[in-house]
Length: 289
Image 1 (cartoon, one colour):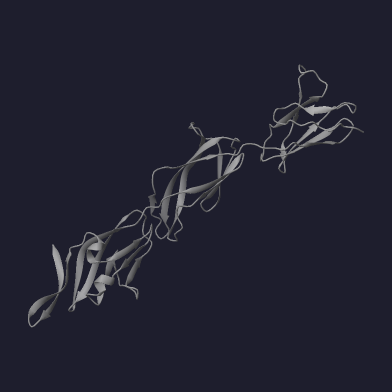
Image 2 (cartoon, rainbow, N blue to C red):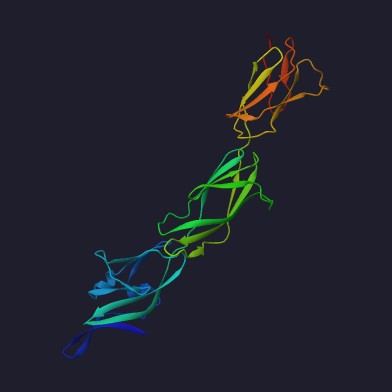
């Protein structure tokens, strides 16, 4: 079915515009559109050249073009097919089209992940509109190749999360389901399939460290490190002149203000000591009175 604009001249209808198909999309009416996830802008420049009054009917309401020949529909659901009708007035008669449709664009989720050695900060970047919010459900983190939950996740703000309890130098996968919730009526729509991202925690690092004599039998070990919060980190140490078969002693070194801090006890003030761990190849100064 087609239609055209005609003018009555001396009792005869004279074609005054191009023919239009009964619309299945807004483009059939010579209208340009700009689409986003929750908004559509329709330009009626072509139709306004033919008629002085035109517009659309959406959700029972009439909308007419502004000074830019544009009609903007807000508060739509993403990736949805929205039914409208085009209307125009000609020779005092209002004509209403069949249903036409405009589809909003989907929201494509993405995120930036800033890893540390034992935690990571996640910031989602998929949506920046004002008509709704993104909700995250069933968020979980697993080691790559494993399906078990491997971390704790805490929301720290809109679209941002803190992942903690990770292992250094390890590959992890982040999973979550994302939903769009329209603020006006609370209606919710799932954005896409389960979102997934992969990240690696940083490998542990430390410097050569130093030893500070506290007493004649006690010393403090200090190493700057990028580790965040560990309770099972230690250094191995022994006398310089101890045979290789002698087992090294261990000093626990928890992280305090970005440094591994350990205490060596029961030292002999007349003996040189050194570190025997592969991780901490350090020769400490002699501990004297």
